[in-house]
Length: 407
Image (cartoon, rainbow, N blue to C red; front, side, top):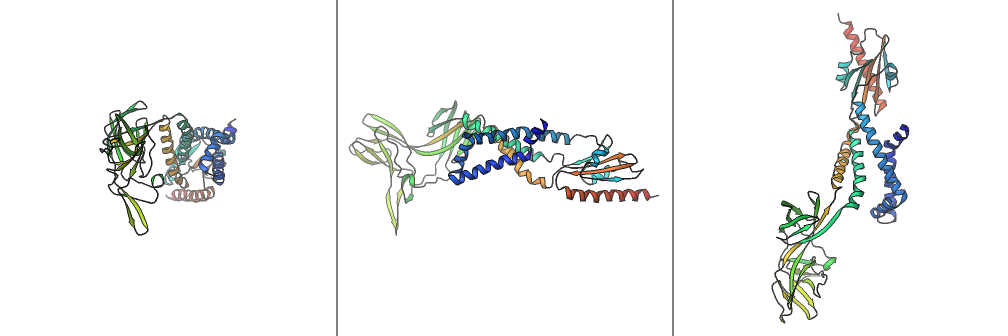
């Protein structure tokens, strides 16, 4: 059973499973949109689900194994001549007066931490070098568990707010305290109108009060407020339209200019340009986005009006317009675990290059009758480690000889 767990939790198994997932993603890229096809494969195909659960099982087994290995590395353990001889390399020092506990200072000079154990000395370096891999696997495990939970168990809602308005969203009181909208009086639109055009509002931001606490929100950048994640998704015009005795409050999804809004109560609205500008072969439409012209289309006809104006026949009257934002709000209990997984994953990846220099090295000195066995093992680069160990032991024996020759 232990052998099966070691195979299941091995780094080679992790690499194999991740490689198969990457291969599936590459194949999805050949046949179409890679992310959507790969997601469908992992979530809906039996083979994809098998890969997912095998990877989760691999990480669940490998992390405790790594923690136990790191714990055992930090503990002094006994050694014996047979264990020393079974290491990557060993040297037999045949000297009656050679103290097996004597090389402790020599071990410290090489950056190792010697400890006296039953039978001799054991010195380690890099006992916690598996920490980057442990962090990486723990982060990946958290993401594998938290992301499916996040996608299936989150709650989301939208709210449209003008400055000074508040709303209850997912059980939280949200109030729009201020709005910074960089709209210009001279916006020149060249090319297609509406959905085919592009309007970028640099610096769009809002100041919110969430459950009595103030926070700032910028376009395109989600922000957290307790258990909520919020994103500023849209900026538009709120316009009261009066027809006869009835007044309809319209939230106009009218940007970029030229976009036709969804009709409300038989009223169709879009923005009108101030004028058309021509220069050479290029032509464009100039809009005043701060105080725009509105095209109001009803059964009676079409009217070009600004906010606060009425049509000549009196059939349509516009009230004072204001800006509004559309706020996307999401509550996700798994979000904390997603963030923790990302932090661990990024830290593990950032520290992983250190493994080229930071790995476990062990040197032991054990009494064996009239001799002392010096043994050495390295986690990586074993050939280089053997060569280095030979140089170090020659240096140790030479220094011992020199000290014994002194009167």
